[in-house]
Amino acid sequence: MAEYTTFGLVVKTKLLGPPVRTQEWLCAAVNADTGLKIDSAYMSKILTGQRTSARVAQSICKILGIEADEK
Image (tube, rainbow, N blue to C red; front, top):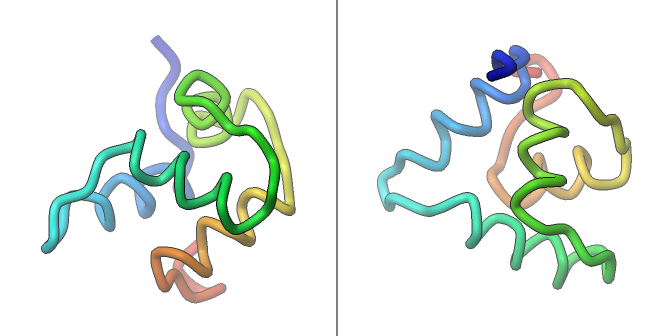
């Protein structure tokens, strides 16, 4: 099992709340924001650093209110 990157840990911490949200919720929010079809497996790869997508990362930051210095 791959370990989360710093960005992945920040995202997972933000999802823990409050309010508590799931990774599936985040996938749906990113899908709505970007028009891309992101599933949970792809999201996991982004959070562990196995894949990179500036567009998806930017959308995640916007949705969760993550500042650039938190990445």
